[in-house]
Picture 1 (tube, rainbow, N blue to C red):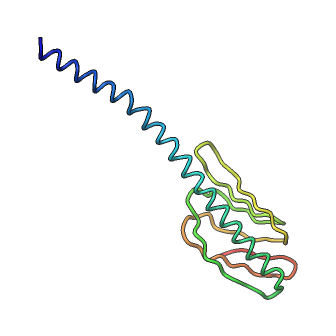
Picture 2: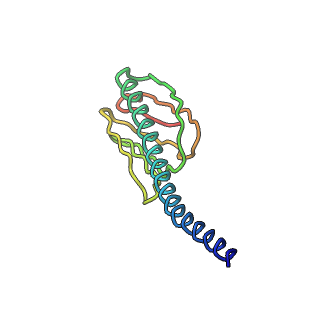
Picture 3: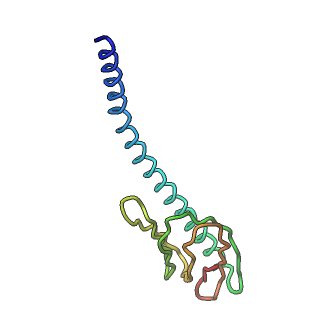
Length: 134
């Protein structure tokens, strides 16, 4: 009878640990995914700001000014569109696709790759607009 009581107490303790651990693991997974999404969005925002700051400087220097900046593109970038007076990054998140849009004070055009890694981005004045590419 005593062995059965000890076994039952161990089962109760193991059950309580399981009941507490599973929700904690699920909460951790949710928060870590959200933090990862926020980090990627912040990285993309910094890339866009860096590109636009360089583009504005090159535009005001005039043709044939040109510069190259080195930036790291994170994973989860679906699409990058550059046109008119804006640059738009489409970023995959846990709950769908998010657009990171930055407006420019100068006309900007071009294209950038969506592959992750370090890229050399060329920014060149073409008179009436700034071209951005790799």
